[in-house]
Every structure is written in structure tokens, then in C-alpha cells.
Image (cartoon, rainbow, N blue to C red; front, side, top):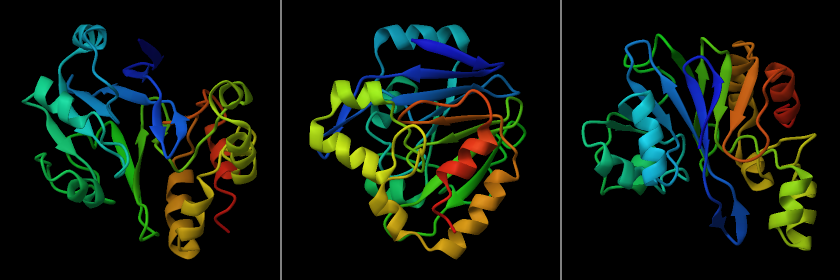
Length: 231
């Protein structure tokens, strides 16, 4: 289930989940930090097979929700790895009062992973915020829903005709890779532009998003295209 992206960074593909009637694939990212602790981004459903494969890499220490939508499987990971710390923005913490989180993630990167991973906080919308991460050694941006990049093959296989029409109109398909339209409309452009520029300054080579075709090269060019709506 685990696929190596680069040294000390892997992706894990999960099952699809329903989001307002749309079938969305799930994807997690695993990073082995300099101190050998595992950083797990957007945990997917934890099967016994996945648990065994994770054990072959190391011990999960940080379970990270990038936004308030990516929390579905946090509880089962927290129960499976009781010594791991839970992290997320305040919006996730509010949504999951049954779980114990560390302090809310914002612009400042926690010391626990600062040597390996940088981050920025897209908080220019009252409806949606998200922490975007950058794995420094592999020059990989890791984002959840600020870019959705579905292939034609996926939407034909999983979405109805009218859903495919919306996907193309919204630009959440390959060739654009935008955030969903309603989220784009909710963002303050000036505030979001400043955060976008910080992200582009990382000059990433790779981009991994939660939903769609991730980019193994030309990461900065991809992000310039997928964030062109931020004028």
C-alpha cells in the first residue's frame, strides 16, 4: 500500500469516501523525520496490512490533520498509536472535541518537525483554512484540498455525467488543478496572495495533493497554474 516518493517520504492510497455525493479518493503521506519519528499527514483508514507496512518504516509520532475535512480516521490512528501527538488547525480541533490535540497549527512550524518540514497557513477564508506543508529534503509540497487534480479516467469511472460537467467547470481536473469553486470564492485574494507567494518561494519540485494526480516534477509550475485564480 505504501509507495516511496523520495528518500524518507511515502504516499499511501486509500479507499474512496463520499463527500456530498461525490466519490473522493483518500491519500496519506508518511515522512520519516531526522530523529526517525514518523509524521503522518491526513491519515487514511487503518487496515492491518497498512499497520504492518507502517511498522516496517517506523513508529508514528505525529498525526496531522491539514484542515477540518481531513479528520475521518484520526481517532482510529490515535487509538492504535496512543503515544502519538495529534495536530491540526483550530478548525479541526473545534470539529473533533473528542480528541486531544497539541496547540493549533498556524504559520509557525512546530519545533518537532521544523528541521524537515516547513509550513504555511492559508487562512484567508472564514469558510475554509488549510495548513500546507513542504518536505525540505525532497522539495515536496503537501496539500489537501487547495488543489484537486482529478484525471479524466477517474471521473469517468466514479462520477455521474453531471458531476463530471461540474468538475470541468470548477477546474478540479488535470490541466487546471484548482481548489473547488465555492472555496475559491470565499478567500480574500490579497491575504491569500501573500501566503501563495510564500509557498512558491519554496520552489518545489513535487506536489502531493489529497485528491487527484500528484506531480513528481515541475512542482512550482504546477502550483502557479493551480493558484492562478489568486490574482
